[in-house]
Image 1 (cartoon, rainbow, N blue to C red):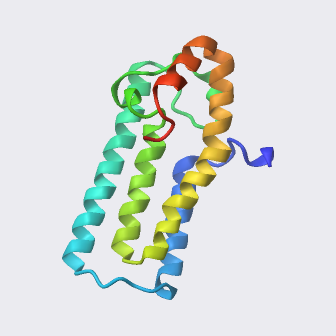
Image 2: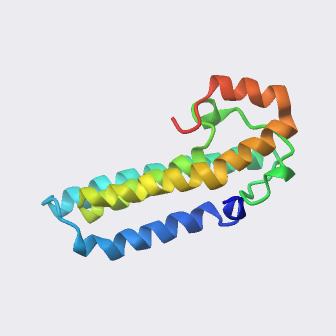
Image 3: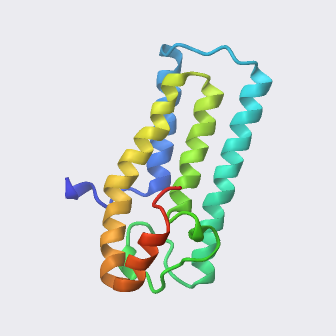
Length: 153
């Protein structure tokens, strides 16, 4: 399955999963939640997710290293500051929170499979290959970072 590694940009994966959630939502059992609560909680989760993801991008830009998830071998620095002190993958965590907000808005417990599918896919086909490359590039520094900071949260 290495043929799928580092091939699909994570935002596109999130968008495809969000579309699938939208498509399957009418067929899933709904949880009756007032629309104002659905919108409020969904927006808070999505905006928090966007904020986390954007802060990850900003940290990479400030470090003058690549933001491209498809070419981790071009990384010039290991970013460990900002949100990277708490999670090794704030950009992916942010996208997951956006999907969680979307699931809440769709008001179906079954739609929580969307963020779960994102976590499984991104971990296997994006994060693990990135970590392999970062281990080769930054050796001991990355091993120390891995020992201190969790992959997700």
